[in-house]
Length: 134
Image: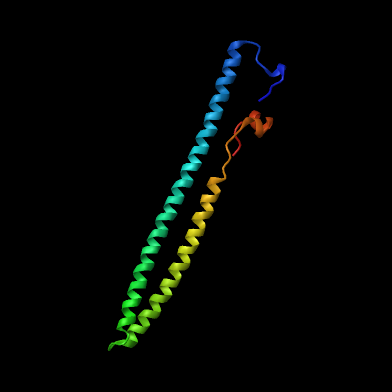
């Protein structure tokens, strides 16, 4: 941050007050960035938990479908065939939902990893003088 000589305080107490004020502003900006990062991490963990739940349900349905296919040659083959059709449809929907959830989680992770740190020199004089902009 470069200031013109006319912008600098004339006495030491004013300079100290300006430095303390700037430090508090920068700390507040850092706190906001840390909070946003924590929210993104929590969302990613939630998405991962949902994905693993879907994967477990998919595995369970695949197992049940295989068991029903073995029973298909038994005495209740019509009922079993309808159950298999229903379960295969449900499985297909879950696989699609799991794929969409995984893509959303990856997109959220990509968004959070592209956050830049705040730098007063690259932000420009308006950002520094105007305070934090959301």
